[in-house]
Structure formats: C-alpha cells, structure tokens
Image (cartoon, one colour):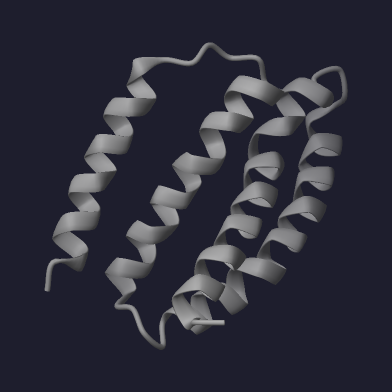
Length: 113
C-alpha cells in the first residue's frame, strides 16, 4: 500500500476515535459527572493514538510537517461533519462547505511546491 494511502487510512481511523473521544460524551454521558466522561474519553483517545502515531510516522517519510497537519485537518472535517449530522443530530450547515473551501486553500498552499 502506498505510504500516502496508508497515512490517510490511519489518520481517518484516528479521527473517528478522536471525534468520539472529544464530543460523544456530550450526548451519551451528559448525565454523568465530568470526571467519568473524561476518563472514558481518555480511554477512547488512547485507541486514537494507536492509529495516529503510526500514521504520522509513516506520513512524515513522504510529507512535510505542514502537509501532514493540513491533511489531518481535511480528514478531521470529513469525519466531523457526518458525526455532527448523523450522531449528534446537528443541522447540516453551509458553514461546513465554507470551512471545507478554506481547507482546500490550505491544501493548495501546503502542497503546491
């Protein structure tokens, strides 16, 4: 598997876990004390790191640090929007499109050379 494809796959998996670690407790653990939510989120974040660290190590062999970060941000938005709409039942807004277009600009500037 090409390094960039491996990096994208691992970062996508990482971002799924990261998004749940950061935001799912707002829906599923809202009635629990904050420290319970923090502990359970930490456990989910541990799994996230098991994907993120190898993704960044592999990606850094062919991408610059800035390219790796912008790639991660694009993947984050691609994971976050379906999470927000389908799991958290938030409305789909045009703001996600505008944010995505801004990220396309970031991709252009980071990958143009």
